[in-house]
Structures are given as structure tokens and as C-alpha cells.
Image 1 (cartoon, helix red, strand yellow):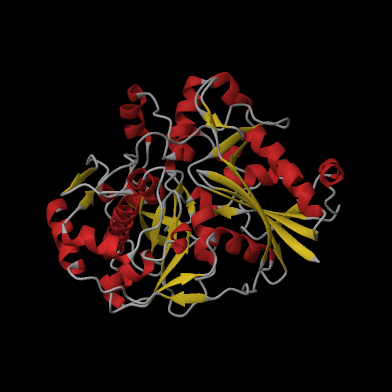
Image 2 (cartoon, helix red, strand yellow):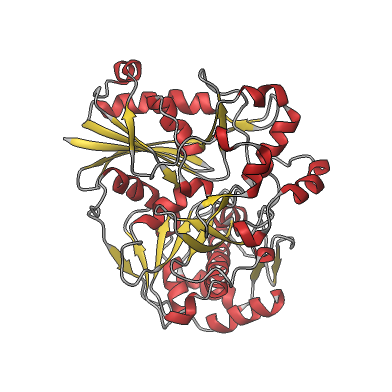
Length: 453
């Protein structure tokens, strides 16, 4: 049986997914994406991921004839490499970079009007990471032959070919101008042009797997390594050929609302609105919040799915979660999260509160992007498809639109499969969410908005 391996590295978990030629999942392995706190700065444990990944691929090689490997990763992350490997650890974008550098970088970074990349905290602007690394570790930085975006770092390790790709470059990095499809003034000013390899489409086979890795894993010598893609853009990929294109909620650690085809002139930097670049290099208006992280914070470690009665109780007693609970970014990043009204009585009610909160935040982001204006469908991708109330509650707030879940809890795997099978659609389907009409739900939403706005 011919199959494809997707290496899916999210901010919270890393996954290996084996899919057959129809796009159906044959096997899956996952591991926490841990951060190493020792050393120069907090960084990704790339060697642990590497060893785990190779062992997983060895197991998959016994199950199917693997013809390609596709790397898909979270954004705001890059690797500085020479011919031998990393010259500096891969920095964790949640690391609070020195405050003393903030003012300096504010002068160096290109204007929002050029990059549509908002000024973000910590290292969420990749350009800020790179400027800091070049100043704090100049000797190591000078050794770098390539700056590789994170999906292409893994592709390079697997096949030895260095490449750049637009979806990771265009993800709030300050390095790219999505509307002009070219590097920003920061890249020119810092002299980094030579460090970024040639741009390649995400679906490009870069080379076959290194012979020594084929021997170690048991994968075929002809197994191709695909260039790779940013994870939210992998989720978006299957929807780009639809007519009309739906708005997409890519859900995971981050919830990213994407509005393909909408204009960029409505984006506001202070609301953490941005333009990503899709796989074709087209600018896509987006807005996001750290929904998966906030859901976990609100629901707690002992969370268990709630019932309709739990949702109705919280709505009836006006128990509201007010942003934000991650503090990293989002439209209300300056606010400290709080709970207004009677506290949830048990773990099911905490799950219910987290669900109500994430629905309201998603609805707010869609409205801010202007999605309401044209009645476009709304597709929900990723982990929130496993929450049976998320889609129906959102559908109740948006009666003029069709809200549906995909049947793939990880839209990233589907998008990765499509890169290897370019021009084909996977054997997946969508499930329309039937509106859950709870008493007082619309009034609850208005009360929540009135407190915030």
C-alpha cells in the first residue's frame, strides 16, 4: 500500500500521521512538543523530536510503502544552520526577549502598512527573534549559511536541500510583504537576503530521503521529501479551490480565523489582525487568539465534556469568561482574564464555560474580519471539531451562514496530504452544524460584548 507521512509539529504536540492514497489515516503517533529551559535561552528540543520522528517512521515503514514525507509546523519559528546543523538552538517564540531590545526593534521593524504583521509580544514576530540573535550571539549568527523556516528545516534534515516557502515567511514575521509578495525592508537592511534559500512552492519535492536515513528507518530510497507548509495554511489549503471560498477557523493551540478574498484595508494592528500568505502566495486577512491554550486554562486539568444543561445553566446565571487567559496576543491581549458571575460548580461547567468563551471569541474575530457581510460558509478545522457544542453554538449566532465541521480533527494532515497529491482532494466530508438554540444565548453574547467594548 502506498502512503504519505505527515510530520505535524504544533506548538503543544508533535504528530506523525500515516495516510493512504485516498487521504485516510492508517496510523498516528504523537508526542509533547517540549521546551528545553537550560542553555542560551528556552528552545525547542529538536534532537528529541528527531529521534522520536525517525523511530515513528521506522514503525510506519513496516505498515506501508511510504512514497513521501511532508513537514507541517507552527509559525514564528526558524532555524539558523551551517552545513553541519544548527548554529544556535531553535528559539521558543514564547520566550520573553529582553525589554531593552523592544524599543530598538520598534525602530528597525517595517511599518504595518507594508507587512500587515502586528507588533507582538515575546518572539511572536520572527524578525525580532532574528535581530536579537544576531546581536546577542554575533559569532554564531555569522556562521549561519541559511535561515530556514521551521517546516523547511525538517525537510533539509531529511533530504539535504535548503528551501524557503511563503506561508511561513508570511506569518507575522515582519520579514515579508504579503501584498507585494516580496521580502520586507528589514531583510534588506539586515543583509539577510543571502541567508534565505530560493523560494519553492509548498508542494515541491525537494529531493529523496538521505540514504543513511532510508537505511535507518526502512523507508524506500525513493521516498520524496516535500518542501512543507505552515500549519494553519495547511488547514486552509483544501478550501482555496471552493466557490465561493468559505471563512476558515483553524483550531488548536491557536484559533485562527481566515477570510480568503476579503480586502486587507480593514485590518487593524492594535486588534492583532494580520495578513497571512496562503500556499499560492496570496494575502489572506486573518485574526487569531490562543484559543486552545485558553480553553485548557478555563476548563482545567480534570475537564470532562459538558451537556446542554451545563451550558444553559451558565447562560442563565450570566457566568461569563472575559479575555484573556493566555496573555500572548489576540484582540484583547491587554486585558487580564476574569470570570464574571457565579463560578462554575464542577468540571463539566468549567468545560461549558471554556466552550462558550471560545465560541464568542471566534464569533468576534469573524465579525471583525467582515465575514458576516457576504454570508460565506464557515469551515471549522482542527481540535475544536471534537467539541460537539462548538459548531452548533457558533451556528446559532450566525443564522445567515452555514457552519460546518470537517471530519478531520487535524486539518494540517489533510493539507499535508494534498501537497503530495497536488490537484487531488482527499476522501473527506463536511458535517453541517445544526444551530443549538439555547434560551438567552444571543443576549449573553451582547452582554459579553458590552463588558468588553
